Length: 369
Image (cartoon, rainbow, N blue to C red; front, side, top):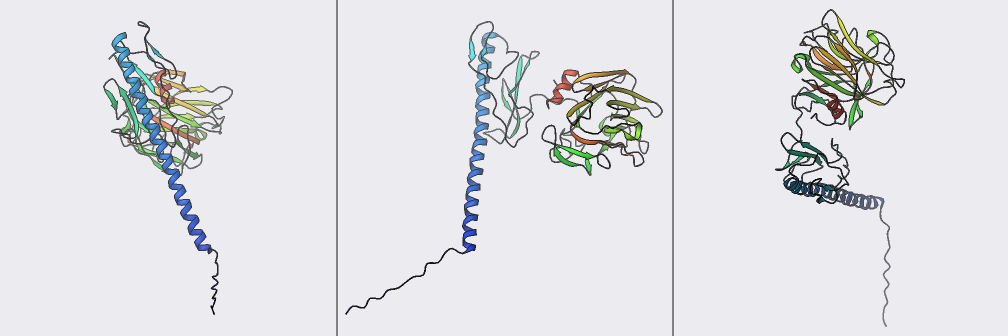
């Protein structure tokens, strides 16, 4: 007789903990896959940029060998054809790929011909290190690709791009200390939003940055506030003082206000205000759109630029700056603060007078020529 023994096994479902662990593992694997794909695509874009530039460099050298000069301009999508020989050296000038999670001043391949030295520069960026090149701004020249920008920021004293902080990116270490202002979306990348009641950014002493004229100061601003009213109701974009302590009204400043729609550059020599102002058009400066203001002073002539256009000129002399601190977004006098309300971005200070075309280049995030 055969004894049949049946053993019945009990089927159990996954526990909640086991399911959560499985889901977690799947999410991690998926995330690693997505990151790997993104990094591969990022590296692919950078390899293409280097390949594009190498191709253009070869075409430019052939052009120079037969035409005798380099071309004045290059336009993406068009051919590179010699006007004298009629030879097409490149069927189509390549177009740069979009940047992802990376802020670059050069969205296109920025070609500049140097007719004085019979040379050229093509500025572009790499999102990460490729071959022997580091991430960041690069410059293609007849001798190769350099790990630097094509055009030097000659005369630049301080630059505040506000990418994560208020540090000076000029290399001169005139870093800012933030009081209350918070980072937000700026004109390019990030900017600082100021509440108009207590926020400002403190910079080092004015005379450590500039001794006096000549100078150029520029900034992008966005506000919906009409800073109307004389004196205390002003909105100060930047204030550089001539005093060593205390009397912060004396100095040079970029001002919004006093009367409706007015922007102005003011200088006080300790006893007299010299104002150079412009009343913005019917849209006004406080239309909650981005506007650019720049002021220059040669030592005898001051100029005001609004959105890249020269709008006011005044003949007056200029003295020197003092040891009290420079302030962005206010006068920073406890008894008379004069706070700016809105967003500020890309603030520059140069120790030279920039021309109108170079003011426009600053607006584009590009160094002056």
